[in-house]
Length: 223
Ligand SMILES: [Zn+2]
Image (cartoon, rainbow, N blue to C red):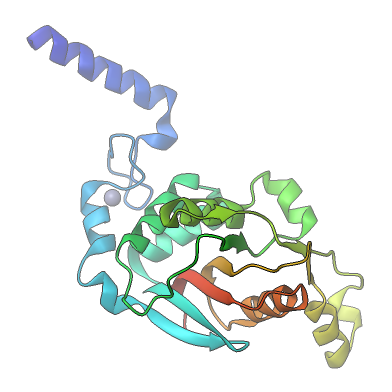
């Protein structure tokens, strides 16, 4: 038994050397045994009544649901996903959906989960679309399918050269539907701030034919 425990410990040390990104908590740096968060930080994320932290806001005539305020562990997870492409953070955030308020819409099985697409240049730089990673995890959590429904067009003109009306127009056309949409859509994003991005995406989905749209963000910031 003693030898087995020692081998286990050695194996664990080797694993941490080989896979260091999976060995420490992305919030506090404590050894996490391969998990994204250590037990203390996971408790912190789920502390209190998760149901009470849900909020809704109206965006372009649809309800946008946000799970947590944009602070603490939830915020760290969003930033890790966004800036360090930490795919495991998406799983931790999506797991918060296991406690949903009764008023959260019952999404029919043909609902497609989609995301806010990145500008083509940024996607190439990072090699990961964090919006897609999050949408995939949310879809898995809800037993739905996910796919890209929106296309992000590169800005045709540099914003700085446009007047105010031109800028607004330039951004309004940033998202276009990639296919006819005759099914319910769940648009997922990491954080809701002013709601401008979500609004443009909702408008584009509607232009593509979507009649039933729900927005879901992991956190909400004061906007
Ligand atoms: Zn931790």
